[in-house]
Length: 476
Image 1 (cartoon, rainbow, N blue to C red):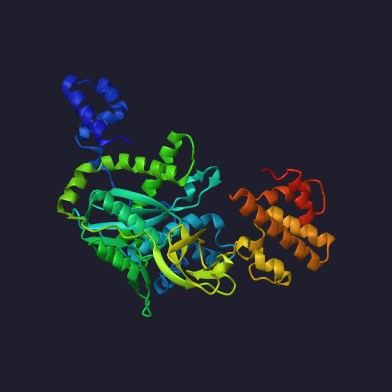
Image 2 (image 1 turned 30 degrees about the horizontal axis):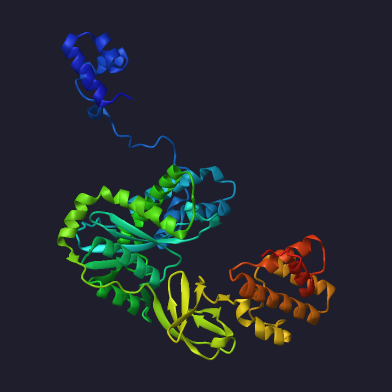
Protein backbone atom coordinates (compact mmCIF):
# COMPACT_ATOMS: atom_id res chain seq x y z
CA UNK A 1 0.00 0.00 0.00
CA UNK A 2 1.34 3.40 -1.03
CA UNK A 3 1.65 5.89 1.79
CA UNK A 4 1.34 9.66 1.89
CA UNK A 5 5.08 10.08 2.57
CA UNK A 6 5.95 8.20 -0.64
CA UNK A 7 3.70 10.40 -2.76
CA UNK A 8 5.15 13.54 -1.18
CA UNK A 9 8.65 12.29 -2.03
CA UNK A 10 7.48 11.51 -5.58
CA UNK A 11 6.23 15.07 -6.06
CA UNK A 12 9.51 16.49 -4.72
CA UNK A 13 11.59 14.40 -7.15
CA UNK A 14 9.34 15.28 -10.09
CA UNK A 15 9.66 18.97 -9.32
CA UNK A 16 13.45 18.55 -9.14
CA UNK A 17 14.10 16.69 -12.40
CA UNK A 18 10.69 15.81 -13.98
CA UNK A 19 11.61 12.20 -14.87
CA UNK A 20 8.71 9.91 -13.84
CA UNK A 21 10.73 6.66 -14.05
CA UNK A 22 13.54 7.89 -11.82
CA UNK A 23 11.12 9.61 -9.42
CA UNK A 24 9.03 6.42 -9.00
CA UNK A 25 12.19 4.38 -8.33
CA UNK A 26 13.41 6.91 -5.76
CA UNK A 27 9.99 6.91 -4.06
CA UNK A 28 9.73 3.13 -3.89
CA UNK A 29 6.66 2.59 -6.07
CA UNK A 30 5.67 1.22 -9.47
CA UNK A 31 5.89 3.58 -12.45
CA UNK A 32 2.18 3.21 -13.28
CA UNK A 33 1.24 3.96 -9.67
CA UNK A 34 3.51 7.00 -9.70
CA UNK A 35 1.90 8.28 -12.91
CA UNK A 36 -1.57 7.78 -11.36
CA UNK A 37 -0.78 9.87 -8.27
CA UNK A 38 0.95 12.50 -10.43
CA UNK A 39 -2.21 12.90 -12.49
CA UNK A 40 -4.53 12.86 -9.42
CA UNK A 41 -2.36 15.39 -7.54
CA UNK A 42 -3.78 14.01 -4.29
CA UNK A 43 -2.45 11.93 -1.40
CA UNK A 44 -3.52 8.27 -0.83
CA UNK A 45 -5.35 9.25 2.37
CA UNK A 46 -7.41 11.75 0.36
CA UNK A 47 -8.59 9.23 -2.25
CA UNK A 48 -9.05 6.17 -0.02
CA UNK A 49 -12.67 4.94 0.31
CA UNK A 50 -13.68 3.50 3.72
CA UNK A 51 -14.66 -0.16 3.63
CA UNK A 52 -18.25 -0.10 4.94
CA UNK A 53 -19.67 -3.18 3.24
CA UNK A 54 -19.46 -6.83 4.16
CA UNK A 55 -17.47 -9.18 1.94
CA UNK A 56 -19.47 -12.24 3.01
CA UNK A 57 -22.77 -13.10 4.57
CA UNK A 58 -23.03 -12.98 8.37
CA UNK A 59 -23.16 -16.69 9.42
CA UNK A 60 -25.07 -15.82 12.61
CA UNK A 61 -27.74 -13.57 11.05
CA UNK A 62 -30.49 -16.17 11.54
CA UNK A 63 -29.92 -16.56 15.29
CA UNK A 64 -28.57 -13.12 16.09
CA UNK A 65 -31.89 -11.47 17.15
CA UNK A 66 -32.34 -14.03 19.96
CA UNK A 67 -28.68 -13.74 20.97
CA UNK A 68 -28.98 -9.94 21.13
CA UNK A 69 -32.02 -10.27 23.39
CA UNK A 70 -30.10 -12.52 25.75
CA UNK A 71 -27.24 -10.02 25.85
CA UNK A 72 -29.68 -7.21 26.68
CA UNK A 73 -31.13 -9.22 29.55
CA UNK A 74 -27.71 -10.33 30.87
CA UNK A 75 -24.89 -8.13 29.49
CA UNK A 76 -22.34 -9.95 31.65
CA UNK A 77 -22.73 -13.12 29.52
CA UNK A 78 -19.46 -14.02 27.81
CA UNK A 79 -19.25 -14.73 24.10
CA UNK A 80 -17.71 -18.18 24.61
CA UNK A 81 -20.54 -19.32 26.90
CA UNK A 82 -23.13 -18.06 24.42
CA UNK A 83 -21.39 -19.83 21.53
CA UNK A 84 -21.18 -23.14 23.41
CA UNK A 85 -24.91 -22.87 24.16
CA UNK A 86 -25.57 -22.10 20.50
CA UNK A 87 -23.63 -25.18 19.38
CA UNK A 88 -25.74 -27.32 21.69
CA UNK A 89 -29.04 -25.73 20.61
CA UNK A 90 -28.28 -25.90 16.87
CA UNK A 91 -26.25 -29.11 16.26
CA UNK A 92 -24.67 -29.23 12.81
CA UNK A 93 -25.51 -25.58 12.10
CA UNK A 94 -22.24 -24.12 13.41
CA UNK A 95 -18.68 -25.34 13.84
CA UNK A 96 -16.27 -24.82 16.80
CA UNK A 97 -13.89 -22.98 14.46
CA UNK A 98 -16.40 -20.12 14.18
CA UNK A 99 -15.84 -19.07 17.81
CA UNK A 100 -13.55 -16.14 16.93
CA UNK A 101 -16.06 -14.84 14.38
CA UNK A 102 -18.80 -15.05 17.00
CA UNK A 103 -16.64 -13.27 19.59
CA UNK A 104 -16.01 -10.40 17.15
CA UNK A 105 -19.77 -10.19 16.48
CA UNK A 106 -20.52 -9.96 20.22
CA UNK A 107 -17.77 -7.38 20.72
CA UNK A 108 -19.24 -5.24 17.93
CA UNK A 109 -22.68 -5.47 19.55
CA UNK A 110 -21.31 -4.37 22.91
CA UNK A 111 -19.64 -1.36 21.30
CA UNK A 112 -22.72 -0.28 19.33
CA UNK A 113 -25.73 -1.39 21.37
CA UNK A 114 -24.39 -2.59 24.71
CA UNK A 115 -24.73 -0.92 28.12
CA UNK A 116 -22.40 1.92 29.21
CA UNK A 117 -19.01 0.79 30.51
CA UNK A 118 -17.18 2.05 33.56
CA UNK A 119 -14.48 4.55 32.70
CA UNK A 120 -11.48 5.72 34.65
CA UNK A 121 -10.29 9.27 34.99
CA UNK A 122 -6.67 10.30 34.67
CA UNK A 123 -5.58 12.12 37.82
CA UNK A 124 -3.30 15.14 38.00
CA UNK A 125 -0.88 14.72 40.89
CA UNK A 126 0.15 17.82 42.80
CA UNK A 127 3.61 18.09 44.38
CA UNK A 128 3.77 16.92 47.98
CA UNK A 129 0.04 16.17 48.25
CA UNK A 130 0.09 12.44 48.99
CA UNK A 131 2.12 9.29 49.44
CA UNK A 132 0.83 5.86 48.41
CA UNK A 133 1.83 2.59 50.08
CA UNK A 134 1.24 -0.97 48.94
CA UNK A 135 2.56 -4.50 49.49
CA UNK A 136 3.73 -6.68 46.61
CA UNK A 137 4.85 -10.31 46.58
CA UNK A 138 8.53 -10.70 45.60
CA UNK A 139 8.71 -14.52 45.48
CA UNK A 140 9.03 -14.45 41.68
CA UNK A 141 12.49 -12.91 42.04
CA UNK A 142 13.75 -16.25 43.42
CA UNK A 143 15.82 -14.70 46.22
CA UNK A 144 17.74 -17.08 48.50
CA UNK A 145 19.55 -16.38 51.76
CA UNK A 146 22.51 -18.65 52.38
CA UNK A 147 21.14 -21.03 49.76
CA UNK A 148 17.69 -21.27 51.39
CA UNK A 149 14.57 -20.05 49.60
CA UNK A 150 13.36 -16.72 51.00
CA UNK A 151 9.63 -16.08 50.44
CA UNK A 152 8.84 -12.43 51.23
CA UNK A 153 6.92 -9.28 50.40
CA UNK A 154 8.09 -5.76 49.65
CA UNK A 155 6.36 -2.78 51.27
CA UNK A 156 6.64 0.12 48.81
CA UNK A 157 5.94 3.83 49.42
CA UNK A 158 5.67 6.13 46.38
CA UNK A 159 5.27 9.89 45.92
CA UNK A 160 2.98 9.97 42.82
CA UNK A 161 4.14 13.39 41.53
CA UNK A 162 7.86 12.55 41.31
CA UNK A 163 7.55 8.73 41.45
CA UNK A 164 10.20 8.67 44.18
CA UNK A 165 9.97 5.25 45.84
CA UNK A 166 11.34 3.28 48.76
CA UNK A 167 10.81 -0.35 49.80
CA UNK A 168 11.42 -2.52 52.84
CA UNK A 169 11.46 -6.30 53.11
CA UNK A 170 8.65 -7.91 55.12
CA UNK A 171 6.99 -11.29 55.59
CA UNK A 172 3.31 -10.30 55.78
CA UNK A 173 0.85 -7.44 55.33
CA UNK A 174 0.88 -6.52 59.01
CA UNK A 175 0.79 -3.23 60.91
CA UNK A 176 4.43 -3.70 62.10
CA UNK A 177 5.50 -4.16 58.47
CA UNK A 178 3.48 -1.12 57.38
CA UNK A 179 4.84 0.94 60.27
CA UNK A 180 8.42 0.06 59.37
CA UNK A 181 7.90 0.65 55.64
CA UNK A 182 6.28 4.08 56.01
CA UNK A 183 8.76 5.27 58.63
CA UNK A 184 11.81 4.09 56.65
CA UNK A 185 10.60 6.19 53.70
CA UNK A 186 9.53 9.42 55.44
CA UNK A 187 12.51 9.55 57.80
CA UNK A 188 14.75 9.13 54.75
CA UNK A 189 12.95 12.07 53.08
CA UNK A 190 12.86 14.17 56.26
CA UNK A 191 9.45 15.52 55.17
CA UNK A 192 5.87 14.30 54.94
CA UNK A 193 3.06 14.99 52.44
CA UNK A 194 -0.43 16.01 53.43
CA UNK A 195 -2.08 12.61 52.88
CA UNK A 196 -1.07 8.98 53.17
CA UNK A 197 -3.08 6.63 50.94
CA UNK A 198 -3.25 2.86 51.10
CA UNK A 199 -5.56 0.09 49.96
CA UNK A 200 -8.02 -1.79 52.19
CA UNK A 201 -5.53 -4.31 53.56
CA UNK A 202 -6.07 -5.61 57.10
CA UNK A 203 -2.90 -3.79 58.13
CA UNK A 204 -4.69 -0.45 57.70
CA UNK A 205 -8.44 -1.12 57.85
CA UNK A 206 -11.06 -3.45 59.31
CA UNK A 207 -14.60 -4.47 58.38
CA UNK A 208 -17.67 -2.59 59.56
CA UNK A 209 -21.15 -4.14 59.92
CA UNK A 210 -22.23 -1.96 56.96
CA UNK A 211 -19.78 -3.76 54.69
CA UNK A 212 -17.48 -0.75 54.45
CA UNK A 213 -13.96 -0.44 55.85
CA UNK A 214 -12.64 1.76 58.65
CA UNK A 215 -9.09 2.60 59.70
CA UNK A 216 -7.41 0.48 62.35
CA UNK A 217 -6.55 2.35 65.52
CA UNK A 218 -2.84 1.44 65.22
CA UNK A 219 -2.71 2.67 61.63
CA UNK A 220 -4.43 5.96 62.46
CA UNK A 221 -2.07 6.50 65.38
CA UNK A 222 0.95 5.97 63.14
CA UNK A 223 -0.18 8.32 60.36
CA UNK A 224 -1.34 11.07 62.72
CA UNK A 225 1.92 10.79 64.68
CA UNK A 226 3.87 11.42 61.46
CA UNK A 227 1.70 14.45 60.66
CA UNK A 228 -0.29 13.05 57.73
CA UNK A 229 -4.00 12.49 57.12
CA UNK A 230 -4.96 8.87 56.32
CA UNK A 231 -7.12 8.09 53.32
CA UNK A 232 -7.91 4.88 51.51
CA UNK A 233 -9.29 3.78 48.18
CA UNK A 234 -12.78 2.43 47.50
CA UNK A 235 -13.31 -1.28 48.17
CA UNK A 236 -12.32 -3.15 45.01
CA UNK A 237 -11.00 0.04 43.36
CA UNK A 238 -7.30 -0.78 43.05
CA UNK A 239 -6.92 1.72 40.19
CA UNK A 240 -7.30 4.52 42.76
CA UNK A 241 -3.90 3.42 44.09
CA UNK A 242 -2.69 3.34 40.50
CA UNK A 243 0.78 4.85 40.78
CA UNK A 244 2.09 2.49 43.42
CA UNK A 245 0.24 -0.45 41.80
CA UNK A 246 1.94 0.20 38.44
CA UNK A 247 5.31 0.84 40.06
CA UNK A 248 5.10 -2.56 41.82
CA UNK A 249 5.52 -4.22 38.44
CA UNK A 250 8.18 -1.74 37.31
CA UNK A 251 10.09 -2.27 40.56
CA UNK A 252 10.23 -6.04 40.16
CA UNK A 253 11.30 -5.72 36.52
CA UNK A 254 14.12 -3.39 37.59
CA UNK A 255 15.19 -5.74 40.38
CA UNK A 256 15.13 -8.66 37.94
CA UNK A 257 17.50 -6.79 35.61
CA UNK A 258 19.88 -5.91 38.45
CA UNK A 259 19.84 -9.54 39.63
CA UNK A 260 20.82 -10.66 36.13
CA UNK A 261 23.65 -8.13 36.13
CA UNK A 262 24.71 -9.33 39.59
CA UNK A 263 24.88 -12.90 38.34
CA UNK A 264 23.41 -14.45 41.49
CA UNK A 265 20.17 -14.39 43.46
CA UNK A 266 21.76 -15.68 46.64
CA UNK A 267 22.67 -13.35 49.52
CA UNK A 268 24.63 -14.09 52.66
CA UNK A 269 21.96 -12.65 54.95
CA UNK A 270 18.84 -10.52 55.09
CA UNK A 271 21.06 -7.52 55.88
CA UNK A 272 23.08 -7.97 52.69
CA UNK A 273 19.89 -8.35 50.62
CA UNK A 274 18.44 -5.17 52.16
CA UNK A 275 21.69 -3.29 51.44
CA UNK A 276 21.56 -4.41 47.82
CA UNK A 277 17.95 -3.21 47.54
CA UNK A 278 18.97 0.16 48.98
CA UNK A 279 21.68 0.55 46.34
CA UNK A 280 19.24 -0.23 43.50
CA UNK A 281 16.62 2.21 44.82
CA UNK A 282 19.16 4.98 45.39
CA UNK A 283 20.26 4.72 41.75
CA UNK A 284 16.70 4.80 40.39
CA UNK A 285 15.70 7.73 42.63
CA UNK A 286 18.56 9.84 41.25
CA UNK A 287 16.57 10.13 38.01
CA UNK A 288 13.70 11.74 39.94
CA UNK A 289 15.65 14.36 41.87
CA UNK A 290 14.33 17.35 39.91
CA UNK A 291 10.67 16.60 40.60
CA UNK A 292 11.46 15.42 44.11
CA UNK A 293 12.87 18.87 44.92
CA UNK A 294 9.52 20.38 43.92
CA UNK A 295 7.77 18.00 46.31
CA UNK A 296 10.15 18.57 49.20
CA UNK A 297 9.73 22.34 48.81
CA UNK A 298 6.01 22.12 49.69
CA UNK A 299 6.06 19.18 52.11
CA UNK A 300 6.14 19.70 55.86
CA UNK A 301 9.34 18.86 57.76
CA UNK A 302 9.25 15.73 59.90
CA UNK A 303 9.57 16.86 63.52
CA UNK A 304 8.66 13.75 65.53
CA UNK A 305 10.55 10.76 66.87
CA UNK A 306 10.31 7.37 65.26
CA UNK A 307 7.69 5.02 66.72
CA UNK A 308 8.79 1.51 67.75
CA UNK A 309 8.38 -1.01 64.95
CA UNK A 310 6.42 -3.45 67.08
CA UNK A 311 3.11 -3.90 68.88
CA UNK A 312 2.99 -4.82 72.54
CA UNK A 313 0.56 -7.30 74.01
CA UNK A 314 0.17 -8.70 77.53
CA UNK A 315 -0.59 -12.43 77.37
CA UNK A 316 -1.14 -15.00 80.09
CA UNK A 317 0.77 -18.27 79.73
CA UNK A 318 -1.61 -21.23 79.73
CA UNK A 319 -1.26 -24.41 81.77
CA UNK A 320 0.00 -25.99 78.51
CA UNK A 321 2.96 -23.56 78.63
CA UNK A 322 1.71 -21.80 75.49
CA UNK A 323 0.71 -18.27 74.55
CA UNK A 324 -1.75 -17.25 71.85
CA UNK A 325 -0.78 -14.24 69.72
CA UNK A 326 -2.75 -13.05 66.69
CA UNK A 327 -4.68 -16.38 66.49
CA UNK A 328 -1.44 -18.43 66.48
CA UNK A 329 -0.05 -20.57 69.32
CA UNK A 330 3.56 -20.58 70.57
CA UNK A 331 5.23 -22.49 73.39
CA UNK A 332 7.32 -20.78 76.07
CA UNK A 333 9.52 -22.21 78.85
CA UNK A 334 7.41 -24.04 81.43
CA UNK A 335 8.77 -21.88 84.26
CA UNK A 336 6.50 -19.10 82.88
CA UNK A 337 3.32 -21.15 83.23
CA UNK A 338 0.39 -19.17 84.70
CA UNK A 339 2.40 -15.91 84.48
CA UNK A 340 1.55 -12.86 82.39
CA UNK A 341 4.23 -11.99 79.84
CA UNK A 342 4.63 -8.99 77.58
CA UNK A 343 5.01 -9.85 73.90
CA UNK A 344 6.54 -7.50 71.36
CA UNK A 345 5.14 -8.35 67.93
CA UNK A 346 7.47 -7.55 65.04
CA UNK A 347 6.83 -8.36 61.41
CA UNK A 348 9.15 -11.38 61.50
CA UNK A 349 9.47 -12.36 65.17
CA UNK A 350 8.05 -12.23 68.68
CA UNK A 351 10.04 -11.15 71.72
CA UNK A 352 8.71 -12.44 75.05
CA UNK A 353 9.50 -10.41 78.20
CA UNK A 354 8.89 -11.18 81.87
CA UNK A 355 9.74 -8.71 84.63
CA UNK A 356 11.10 -6.43 81.88
CA UNK A 357 13.71 -9.01 80.87
CA UNK A 358 13.83 -10.76 77.50
CA UNK A 359 13.05 -14.47 77.95
CA UNK A 360 13.09 -15.71 74.36
CA UNK A 361 12.70 -14.73 70.71
CA UNK A 362 10.38 -16.74 68.45
CA UNK A 363 10.05 -16.67 64.67
CA UNK A 364 6.60 -15.29 63.90
CA UNK A 365 4.16 -17.65 62.20
CA UNK A 366 2.28 -16.62 59.06
CA UNK A 367 -1.43 -17.23 58.57
CA UNK A 368 -4.04 -18.14 61.16
CA UNK A 369 -4.57 -21.02 63.62
CA UNK A 370 -0.96 -22.17 63.20
CA UNK A 371 1.24 -23.40 66.06
CA UNK A 372 4.89 -23.82 66.96
CA UNK A 373 5.78 -25.87 70.05
CA UNK A 374 9.46 -26.24 70.97
CA UNK A 375 10.04 -29.64 72.56
CA UNK A 376 12.69 -28.13 74.85
CA UNK A 377 10.00 -26.11 76.63
CA UNK A 378 7.92 -29.12 77.67
CA UNK A 379 10.18 -32.18 77.53
CA UNK A 380 10.83 -32.31 81.30
CA UNK A 381 7.13 -32.79 82.01
CA UNK A 382 6.58 -35.16 79.07
CA UNK A 383 9.31 -37.51 80.30
CA UNK A 384 7.45 -37.77 83.61
CA UNK A 385 4.05 -38.09 81.86
CA UNK A 386 4.79 -40.16 78.73
CA UNK A 387 1.15 -41.19 78.42
CA UNK A 388 0.29 -37.63 77.33
CA UNK A 389 2.41 -37.92 74.18
CA UNK A 390 0.12 -40.24 72.25
CA UNK A 391 -2.83 -37.78 71.99
CA UNK A 392 -0.95 -34.52 72.50
CA UNK A 393 -2.62 -31.77 70.45
CA UNK A 394 0.68 -30.45 69.08
CA UNK A 395 2.46 -33.81 68.81
CA UNK A 396 3.71 -33.15 65.27
CA UNK A 397 5.82 -30.26 66.57
CA UNK A 398 7.74 -32.73 68.74
CA UNK A 399 9.52 -34.15 65.70
CA UNK A 400 12.23 -31.50 65.14
CA UNK A 401 13.38 -33.03 61.85
CA UNK A 402 12.38 -35.86 59.51
CA UNK A 403 15.11 -38.00 61.06
CA UNK A 404 13.37 -37.86 64.44
CA UNK A 405 10.08 -38.84 62.82
CA UNK A 406 11.68 -41.85 61.16
CA UNK A 407 13.34 -42.84 64.43
CA UNK A 408 9.96 -42.80 66.18
CA UNK A 409 8.40 -44.91 63.42
CA UNK A 410 11.25 -47.42 63.77
CA UNK A 411 10.66 -47.60 67.54
CA UNK A 412 6.94 -48.26 66.93
CA UNK A 413 7.83 -51.20 64.66
CA UNK A 414 10.13 -52.88 67.20
CA UNK A 415 8.50 -51.94 70.54
CA UNK A 416 5.08 -51.71 72.10
CA UNK A 417 3.18 -48.43 71.77
CA UNK A 418 3.95 -47.23 75.30
CA UNK A 419 7.60 -48.37 75.19
CA UNK A 420 8.10 -46.57 71.84
CA UNK A 421 6.68 -43.35 73.30
CA UNK A 422 8.87 -43.61 76.41
CA UNK A 423 12.03 -44.32 74.42
CA UNK A 424 11.36 -41.51 71.96
CA UNK A 425 10.74 -39.00 74.75
CA UNK A 426 14.02 -40.07 76.36
CA UNK A 427 15.77 -39.41 73.03
CA UNK A 428 14.24 -35.92 72.95
CA UNK A 429 15.25 -35.39 76.57
CA UNK A 430 18.82 -36.43 75.81
CA UNK A 431 18.85 -34.15 72.75
CA UNK A 432 17.84 -31.26 75.01
CA UNK A 433 20.54 -32.06 77.56
CA UNK A 434 23.23 -32.16 74.87
CA UNK A 435 21.98 -28.94 73.31
CA UNK A 436 21.84 -27.05 76.60
CA UNK A 437 24.75 -28.48 78.57
CA UNK A 438 27.39 -29.36 76.00
CA UNK A 439 27.06 -27.41 72.78
CA UNK A 440 24.91 -24.37 73.66
CA UNK A 441 24.06 -23.73 70.07
CA UNK A 442 21.09 -24.66 67.87
CA UNK A 443 22.13 -27.93 66.28
CA UNK A 444 20.59 -31.41 66.36
CA UNK A 445 23.54 -33.73 67.08
CA UNK A 446 21.12 -36.41 68.18
CA UNK A 447 19.56 -36.17 64.73
CA UNK A 448 22.97 -37.05 63.26
CA UNK A 449 23.14 -40.08 65.53
CA UNK A 450 19.65 -41.20 64.54
CA UNK A 451 20.61 -40.83 60.89
CA UNK A 452 23.64 -43.07 61.42
CA UNK A 453 21.47 -45.65 63.17
CA UNK A 454 19.08 -45.58 60.22
CA UNK A 455 21.92 -46.13 57.75
CA UNK A 456 23.25 -49.11 59.71
CA UNK A 457 19.71 -50.45 60.27
CA UNK A 458 20.29 -50.56 64.02
CA UNK A 459 17.04 -50.27 66.07
CA UNK A 460 16.99 -46.71 67.44
CA UNK A 461 16.73 -46.22 71.19
CA UNK A 462 18.00 -43.69 73.69
CA UNK A 463 20.64 -46.23 74.80
CA UNK A 464 21.98 -46.73 71.27
CA UNK A 465 22.09 -42.95 70.75
CA UNK A 466 24.07 -42.57 73.96
CA UNK A 467 26.52 -45.25 72.83
CA UNK A 468 27.08 -43.39 69.59
CA UNK A 469 27.68 -40.22 71.56
CA UNK A 470 30.19 -42.01 73.77
CA UNK A 471 32.14 -43.10 70.70
CA UNK A 472 32.35 -39.49 69.52
CA UNK A 473 30.07 -39.99 66.50
CA UNK A 474 27.96 -36.99 67.51
CA UNK A 475 30.91 -34.57 67.44
CA UNK A 476 32.17 -32.22 70.15
